[in-house]
Image 1: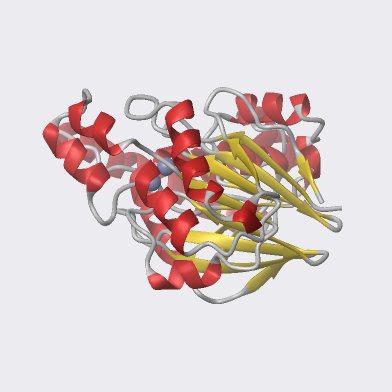
Image 2: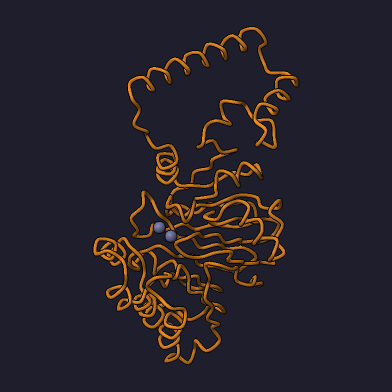
Length: 321
Ligand SMILES: [Zn+2]
Ligand SMILES: [Zn+2]
């Protein structure tokens, strides 16, 4: 069975579970670990059964909970290299230190290196006692973790790289990634395929370029951004610079742009179309729905399509194939 569960969608956090065969992937991890687990259990998904986390891009609404969740579950995180690097820069910002603080930091690091070198020289490989002590020294870590790693906020149990545009697999799920136009280091969308079911996943994109149009074909489920209503955004509360960013070619997809795609490009084959990443300030669920419905309604072949809206504050019911 293939199952698709949107746990959260929007600028305050994104997370979706895609299951196929014996594999279960979390796509983006923008909720806290606690909230993620709560929502998964609410939808009958066991967090412990996740095999991997897959990241679209490094904005905090997509990665906010990734380190804690990956560590807790001991599972790998799949990024493009550009996204991983940007995430690491984001999570370990260079702090401004006074000279005294800087000197103190250098001394501490030298002392730590010295202590580690001494331990390594004396004892060789760490034995069980070391691991127990390490676990006790870091009470928040459930598993024994090397102290140096536990302190590093960018440490993950395993990092796997994929390249935008190159197909790859995680367990039983085949994944095509494609570059999307968005103001991040190396943002991507995905098409997931398992058991003959194809699911397209595209949010956080300023417009729909030809390479994305080419990917979003022959789908059984399409999740597409419908971020803002153009008029609401123009007249809304955002400062001018933010409005420009959202509207730009590397910002977010408007209701109108999503509708234009649905009307003119989309092949109408999906059983479900999910509108996603709706802005809470510059959109209304009814407005997004009506705009998309209008685009679909003129096409008799699309009557089978079920139109759903992904929400920020609660999960969407699981969709099974
Ligand atoms: Zn986002
Ligand atoms: Zn983004």
